[in-house]
Length: 189
Image (cartoon, rainbow, N blue to C red; front, side, top):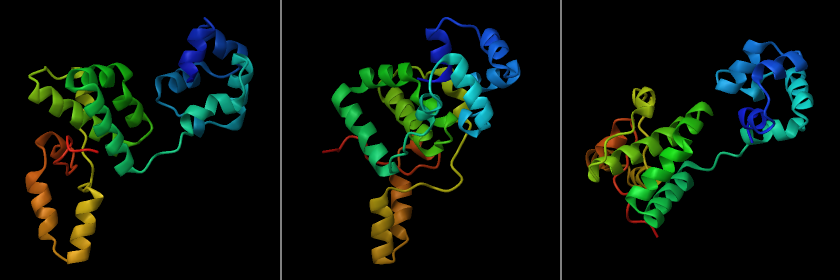
């Protein structure tokens, strides 16, 4: 549970938490809005906040310390979820969960952009209007192309960079917009 959820669950105001804990209101507001990361705050700030909310410091920091899975595993999980739910339910669940923004706030840009590309692609092929909540993230792009590990391995083993060029040419446009080379989202086992 994040700080906002704890404050809400305990029916407190940010102002009251800030005042009682001795944490400047703007600092608490920045933590709650995601502008400041709690795991980058001083131990004193985390301690004061934990004490005021009557939770452990570990409980406050745990959501921020979740291990980041390998990107190929992440992609596989997303594709399996799409296959299990179907296109429309996948769109609804993904947008409701707001994982795209959550990954972006964690600086997990490849995951955020991959999921957004998937939402945009599934929206296009199903004639569903794009969710405009992510227009700011749609302006982003990975600095370097992100290829599937199988393409990178095949290119390295064969010494043929043409493999990467072919993969890029076959990539789904919604993914390429973010510099992610992806051509197959349906054929998962």
